[in-house]
Image (cartoon, rainbow over all chains, first blue to last red; front, side, top):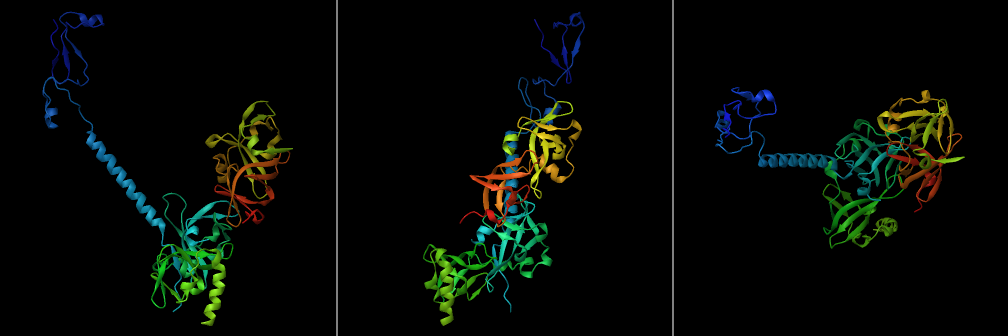
Length: 106
Length: 182
Length: 151
């Protein structure tokens, strides 16, 4: 029966009972540290999560980092508005007065 | 052709075939009845104003596709151009002016200026949006005075409002004759 | 023999010295004052090279023969650079009269294959002598007054 891997805060400690292709990994009594990528499954609450103001519970998956969809929408909206303003301002500057009569002699 | 057709035309050099600028404002003398110059924008979708101006003397020709100049040196610094071209009286824009008779009747609003094709910028009259609807043309000799708000014309002008450009040439002469008598 | 810009576009350019192909016709650069083909632009864009007309042993119906590979050179000035970028290409260029009126688009240009002298400009359904060409550049080709459109 496989024991569940333990989250030690920076790496997964894999019990030696886990078999791998590499023959040396199967040697008894040796615990191997498996190099970690930050796992998507957080089995323990860490201070990192607390700082973001959102606690992940065991078994819960969460995305770390990145912008929310609302954030993207707002950013795109701002870019569109700025571009439109630039466009309007420059077109207005180009339009000019029109048909201008000379100043008469006084 | 009309002033609004000239605005926005590219300014093209005859020898170089380059579009060096485009027409921004059309400046004309109501007394002399002719074009005195144009101010310029740079070419390009979002390009701004062009510092230089183009006095009428430097214009080689005005056609329906372009304003032709001999070369880039035809465009001059505003200080070297006549004052009305280098420093246009932007408050004297006649488009939208009320067309008022001496007697105080409004005949409509000025929509455009009409110039003679192929001439040296001769102005023949004004195109107006008539008070009752539709368009009309008023020969230039009808103009008594003009500002940025109104064009004042004699009372008899009402009879001379032409429906199309074809009649305008004849109307100019007829009007001159009529004015000579009154 | 009469040649045309449209027909010769893309034709292969060969070296007489080595019998190797050096490229194909991208554009023909015209000297508007002398009204003749001044150079052949081989290829397009940044890597394009020019061959002066004097360096051709022949402008033939099947190939343009240059005397040797060393006749190919990079653009020497702004006008030649504009030519390699296609800005000065007469094919498809707007034609304006000297009086500022639109004449149409240049559909083809014919020239003497022996001398490079321009013969006619084909604008729409009209054939116009090249002698009327006053100037041309990135925006338009300007033709003299004799080419005014009929009212």
